[in-house]
Image 1 (cartoon, one colour):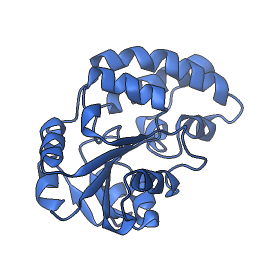
Image 2 (image 1 turned 30 degrees about the vertical axis):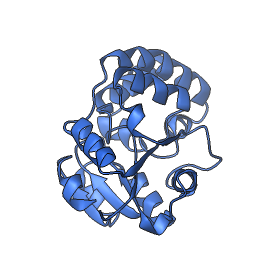
Image 3 (image 1 turned 90 degrees about the horizontal axis):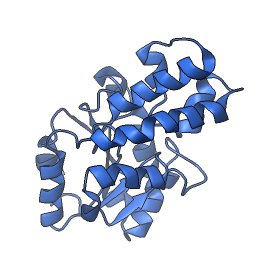
Length: 211
């Protein structure tokens, strides 16, 4: 066992939510701003400091309305949410091995619970750090350090697994082993590689040999 404690991002890492995030970003910007953005423009800050920051990057004068319209569109879509391919088995295996697992995400805690109501994996995680539980957000290391603290874990002996450049930056800043995954399809592999993760994997099963 290389890492007793492993923390995970949620969107695009544990749950396959990229498509519903994109659909809701597109809906909100079209509804509120009356214009269409490219997929890259809409998704470039996803996985970072949270929904408000994502909307501020697009239209700083319309953040509150964009967030409200996004959430009204996005939350019902969680009814069809699924786990990322292979992650259910991998998480169950890590849990059976005695690993201490946690989630650290930019999502509000209420939205995390909405996701886990459809994808019932919460019992595998000892702690969940939501985006509304810390003052600072990824790529700042504060949320990751809070997750490690709750588990009584040494950050240097902890791995963080995520699918965005912000995840990798946060993990490195926290002194954790940074694992980038490509299956989220929110950020392309070249963006992840540019952040210098300690490892990059393309299939969930690869985590078992790595961690």
